[in-house]
Length: 113
Image (tube, rainbow, N blue to C red; front, side, top):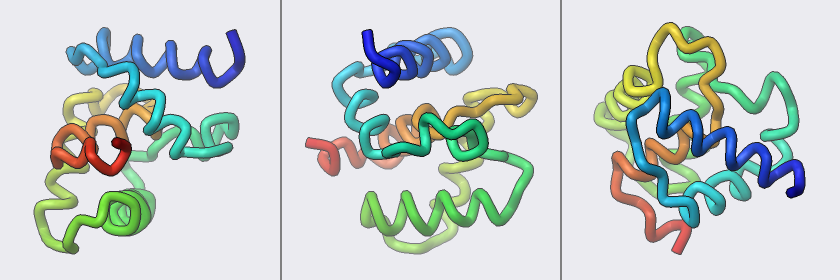
């Protein structure tokens, strides 16, 4: 099993145990690949839910640019819902897991079709 596969298994475990979701492994794999090399960088692989600039980056670079969503107030609400689902007290909110939840929340699985 390669490094990426190990991370995908870790993300699937978080989705099951911390988020109460049964992950679509194909979609999770595609979302993880879409994150690129950031999954191997300790700082970039997580989302800081208390950092407004970080959340705006998720909104601008992922929701608007990658998923093609229109910029409106629903985007930040979706991000907050994903963070709430992951658990606000959870220290390591992995980017691929948050992105996976956002793809599901906004029904944009077709982007990774």
